Amino acid sequence: MHALALDGDRMLVVIVLPSATGTEGSEVLVKSSEDAGATFRQVARFRAATVVTSPDLFWQSLRLIVSRLRLITARQVAYRDEHKALREVQRSLLPDLSLIDAKGAFTAEAVWEPCTYASGDYYDLIPIDADRHLLAVGDVMGHGAESSLMMAIARAQIRELARRFRRTDELMLNLDGYLRDNAPQRQGMSLVVAVYDRRERVLEYSAAGHPFPLLLRAGETSDLPGKPGILLALPFLLGAGYERREIELEPGDHLLFFTDGLLELPVDDAGTLLGRDGLARLFAEVIADGGDAPLAELASRVGAIDVNETADDDRTAVLLTVVE
Image (cartoon, rainbow, N blue to C red):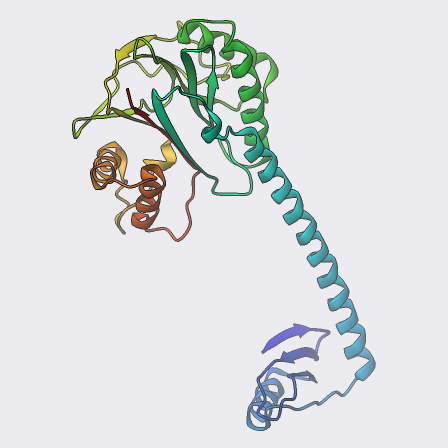
């Protein structure tokens, strides 16, 4: 039963009940809450009733309600269509990893799970030359349309810089300057950029306020070493550049690049977060179990232990596995 006050002594009471006779619910105009209760009991007993002391007022109110509901519904449909279109545009900016020609040197798998209609998470895998590929995973502060705009700007500039700079720290420094001048203000971005040389089997990487990848080698999980650096594009954060590191990889190594949406999720009612140790444990278990899509399985297990019904942060990850 729903009540809508009309004036000092009248209210519109809308009662919707299933009826054994197939008749629909009733709209009833009554004078007081006591009358409303009595009317409700009457309708509950007979399953359908109509008591209208002022039909004109009732139909006028009903037409107004229906008109407003139609307007609200139309707006909701329009917003939903716009959000769906934005999600599809974002998805089209992400690479199809099945089309990457790694010459048999490595395999790559990705998951991208926005928590709203648009995401600030980003990943990319860019062929630089016959032997080298650039891999990037980033996370724009916030969610929604502004974050997706920042993500698109960063993606375009990273693809431009990937062919001009041979060092990841120089690429990061130039990207920071570009975003400060051209991206939405006060919207920082964390990022990790890595270049893998398949012939030398060497991974070069730099980070800007982003979690370092997890390395799984011979069943043991460890963090790639390095200094995190400062976030990109925040004018009040000024640093002395970004660190560049190198590590030699081995066949069978697994590298997990990810955003903090896979770390900062509660796993119990006390609010305990999964964290790096929890993610590393799940990562090792999934790889040990085998399977054709280990990253998809990892994302599924992460989602299963989240005590929240829906994720409150975007979740993005890329798994790089060295084959030879």
